Length: 59
Image (tube, rainbow, N blue to C red; front, top):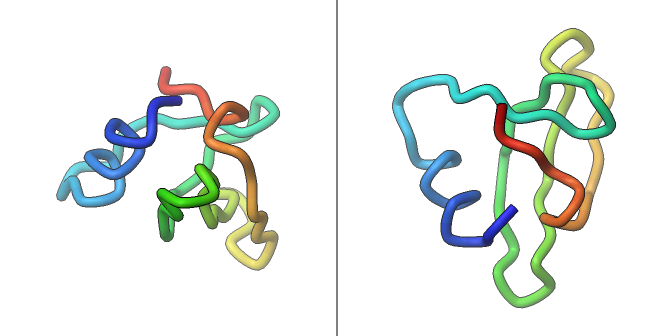
């Protein structure tokens, strides 16, 4: 995913369908310098990940 799009999704008031490894996630933070994002799984909010933006897919 492009870092600008990831930021737009993060700042959106709407919940936009994004997945990481096929699991629906919520983007908590976007690190533009490292091109990574802090995310958590919608079905298991305790399961948080720091992932490359390339690993995120907008559905």
